[in-house]
Image (cartoon, rainbow, N blue to C red; front, side):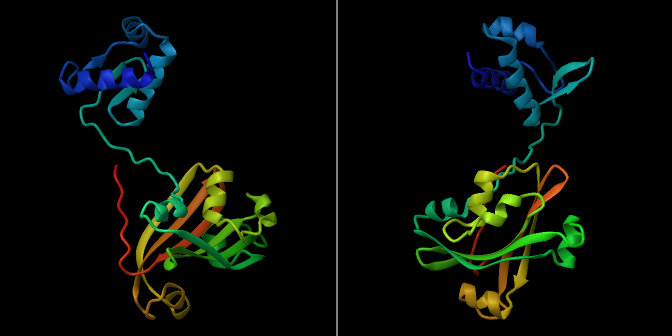
Length: 227
């Protein structure tokens, strides 16, 4: 029996009130014997249910069904290419500007880059069937990701490269409406001052900043997520 099967079985017992909220769940050894599997398999199923907010584990108190189950969001960095192709459109990428610069003061303050620290500053356009879909402005911390210095980003965008090559341990997301300045408006085919859906995304690898990005979308863009 796989850990997914065990997880599903435990969820079934919780839903049919065999194990109501607050009830103690049998130990891993007992469940492993019942399901005819290794204890490690049960452990993985239980850990996932704890991560999902269904069970809670307390030292010396064992495992219980949570009295108030919680949903926990799992963050993944989306690939802009996949987002566009999932809409049935053709993806196209274009690098606008690439430069290695000293990290600007506002960025150093925001993500704790030391004075004199260098970042790779990139400005890119993403298109859906030749229609502007996203303008991306990004800063990659070279101290954390030194291999970025050798990437041209002519053929592959930083979003795709970072997701494929660089792990992260923490992400911060900010959503806002931003009035487009003239330059961003021209890239996205909008009028200056138009309110644009904007995402600021910052990632870290342990205590070290990886990248900070500002992503601008044209009017009419919608973001949908499920928890």
